Amino acid sequence: QVQLVESGGGLMQAGGSLRLSCAASGRTFSTYIMGWFRQAPGKEREFVAAIRWSDSITSYSESVKGRFTISRDNAKNTVYLQMNSLKTEDTAVYYCAARPSILTQFNSWGQGTQVTVSS
Image (cartoon, rainbow, N blue to C red):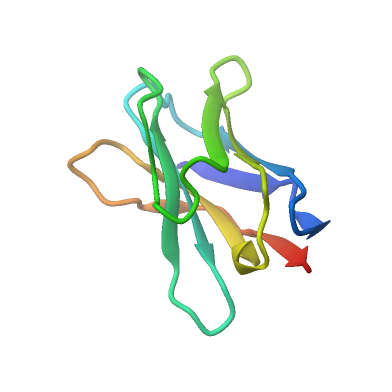
């Protein structure tokens, strides 16, 4: 059973940086795709970024491309989301998610961590 635990959220001024972490356990993740999603108040959850564990191929939403970087640490079984040049519209609960392969849906989710960006 996959377990995902996020950390690193908080309050930051616009233009600042935060790094989120997602500690993964319960499986061997070599074939997995790991992702970050976010949900702002009153809005649907949206995709932010993803990384393929085996070769670190990444993808990003247009809204964060060039500002956010997703990465993973094999030794620590941890996925990171480095968020730079934060904007007030980045305020949301950020969720880590995992999918066993490109053929499946994201089916494991963390509890979420709040990111608040003030102007």
